[in-house]
Amino acid sequence: MTWPAEPRPEWLRTVNAGDVLPLRLEADRPFEREVLMGEAATALGWSLEEAPWGADDFVEPLDLWLAELEATARLTVFGRWFTRRFVLRLLQGRLLLDRYAHDDPGVADEPVVEPVFVVGAPRTGTTLTHRLLAADPRLRAPQGWELLHPVPPPTDATFEADPRIGMADRELSLPQLVSQSLLDIHAYGGRMLKECLSAMSFAFRSEELISRYHVPAYVEWLQGCDMASAYRMHRRVLQVLQRRMPGTRWVLKSPVHLHNLPTLLTVYPDARLVFTHRDPLTVLASVSSLVANLRHAFSDHVDPVAIGRYHADLYCDSLDRLVDLADSGLLPAGRTAHVAYDALAADPAAAIAGAHGQLQLTLDPAAADALAAAASAAGRDHAAAHDYRFDDFGLDRGECRARLARYADRFDVELAP
Image (cartoon, rainbow, N blue to C red; front, side):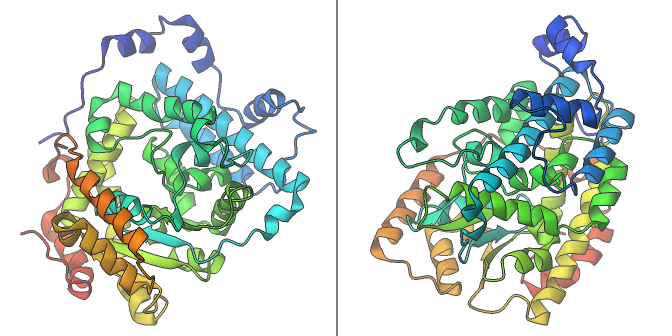
């Protein structure tokens, strides 16, 4: 069985043929760091030399990633056009974050107190868990537009009508116009809750730079690098976002935290962690399908077997490591909760109420009512069927079962035959 690539819409075939001149001319420009940094600075009123770039720890990963975009990603015209704008947005965001911290030094002292992180492999219920935890009025989850455009910080008065909502909505929804399958798998939008990856991308140390593109040398570098600067950038984004809207605790989410728990807890030593658990054999095929469809939005050359192999190695290793971390005491009771996917699907409100109890968070009447309403609304939302097959990604079920057996036994997860 071969992964079925979705047919291109007619408008996209026209763009990728180079027949839309403005997009083609922009897409033809090379991915060169100094050119991109100069464009980003100029758009904000600085020269390349005058721009407040701050620490230069982003240069090495950016150089490597840009080189891989040229050498291995094999992007279409649309893919190059979209990616170039994506890079410019990240560079401009980094400049604005550094300038804001310079102009308002107090932002560095903003306390990010006891944030709650939803941690689990993709497709294990992390999105629903995040959404239901965020229903608690005492917790705040970042929306897409906030993580894409965090500067200036939002205010209560402007939060609902900020023009950045539309900007983020266009960027996040555009790939879904390229691939209907993406909308079936996971919807994105400016007002929807967003993963931590988008904040970490300002450090150019992020799996967001992997999921859309075939960039193997960057992948190898990222797996061996120190992720502390990415988590410090993540914290800086939260500090800026809460600068004019203080008073609530953050509830955050990303599967990437599963691979970086010691670093996360170094930057956020008082963090609370909610782990979601589901049969990893289902997870591996599903996340591989998501990434294959993401890459198909930007390239005509997608290798589903390589994608499957990468995710098998990544999550088999990280889930096995989670057993060691749990047994080591790094994840102590009272700061850690576990949510089973089956329990979440059967009774979402009860599962999340249980997580509150494990974290020793009181669920007061207002929070309980909000949770019940959010769970009811979630039950009325029906996503389209996500069609994927284990064999499409060259995965060996027996080998994966063996590698995942220790995790499944430790966290009482039933593996499919």
